[in-house]
Image (cartoon, rainbow, N blue to C red; front, side):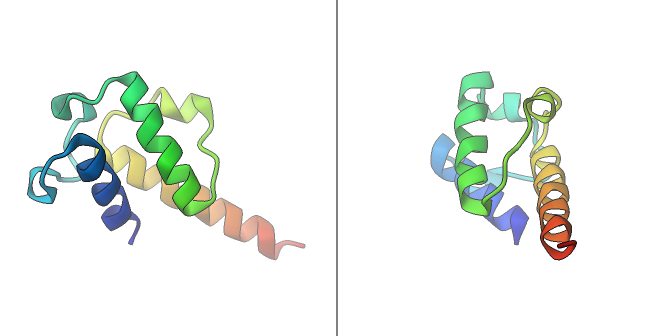
Length: 84
């Protein structure tokens, strides 16, 4: 599910086909600069109700990096909610 949402947001933002995207696709190859990446990540934060720390943003290079980090953040968020 995370992958589908990430692909959808990137395809809409970059006006490209979902067929152009793979997990291994580098954001730079899609013409995504740092400002555009922040815009995309903000949309994903809103969509998943998470906060992506700045230090993670600097290490995101591929679409897989986005999906993996969102999954980890969602997992951590869920476990914190259940620890109470």
